[in-house]
Image 1 (cartoon, rainbow, N blue to C red):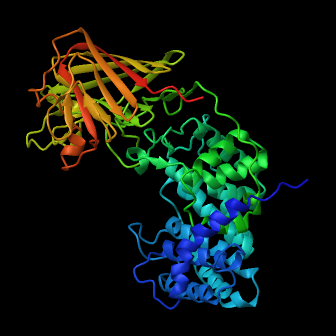
Image 2: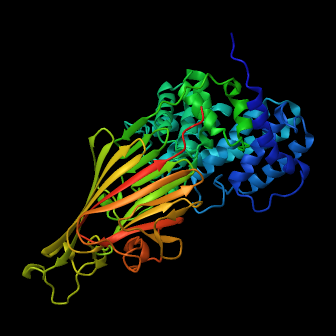
Image 3: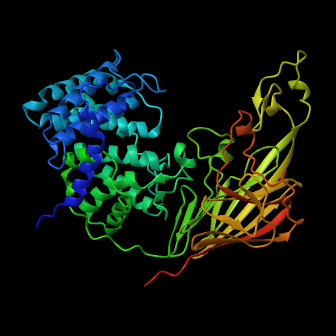
Length: 572
């Protein structure tokens, strides 16, 4: 017996498309001045989908067709002589143009099957696709996910305009192997690029090429993402190597992928994730086109599986652990790329947050540790060990050096030595040729994840330097028991404090096992976050915002910090 359609879902995606398309159709001759090429193509695709959908208010609308033609003329005008699109910071970019061509080709499929009314739209889309195909066939990329976006564009071009050269090029890219690790994370570890690029591209390629292995790669990524979904409806990004590592990422963009695979595989956990992704409503206007191109999306979801609690996961490749219970959700992270590469760089995981704690509306967004050691920045673990179930040790040793005179055979009469980078700064001093006197500083953080939070034991060893533990709470509450020191900042010594939002709260209590007394609220020179010279030398920062509570002092120190989530018992 065929699975019934989910009419409520279909109507919701139609309404989302109409919110974008209806104003465009209301002024069909209005030139889309300033709209970038990707927005133009997405609008055309949505207008054509709305025209085709019986659930859209624009079904069969001649004004929708006219608006699509207006946008297609603007889109064609934005193509350069290479067929690539102008605009954006990536100049003459095949992958950036691939995003647009993917929408152009989807719109072509929708328009070509709609009858003579869309003949001009179909012809204009074919002209744009044909102009771009040569450059996409031979063009290169500069990020991992671009390969799959470009491959998806080539496969879509072949779907509408068969050409074996396009498939050969796809195979050339795919023969490099999909960059998904043993734990199910893509190499960029980015929720944004998984949801918007890699997963949809690989699903398309699986369908066009009949590649079941690509479908399985997407399923593995979605399965791992289940353990990264946070109680606030976002996906964990602290381990990302891309722009989203410092920002929350919503679950909503994962909706079509969880929904499709739940329907096709019967996985109840994917069905639950699809429902969560739609909790805030459906706002993506592109979903209507997706339902027309992939009718399986319109089928009813299988019965969602109940969430099993407590639940824990350690993703070894990203060095990220999470534990979820009825009262708390805690994340521990020790997978930064900075200790290995000794630089802050786009494409590296640089976020120094090593712990988060969710207790309903009370959220500890970030725990970070600054050290005043040669301005090398905050603690970023170089190693993470699982000591036992739900118990981890994060470790980083920083080393700086003072340099001795050059050996006689390396000296120059003119004093013109080569520029070299010694890990902190660059100078014309031929650092690698000099004997070094090293100074080291080691930080160890042991974290014991509990059902109601976490216990931390922080050991700071080495020379006497200032340090500050920063706890950034999400706005909405006030720290009770800590001393305000201005600018949304508080000081905590050894007394307990509570951060309360409504009936939810997080309690923090610190204790000194070894070392000097903790710094009081008068020590603003210690109680602060220092991003390190890689940021400050260019006038930047990666500092958090929110209500920031500081515990600090001068090391060496051994400190314990207890974090406890307290929430009212659920009503049965």
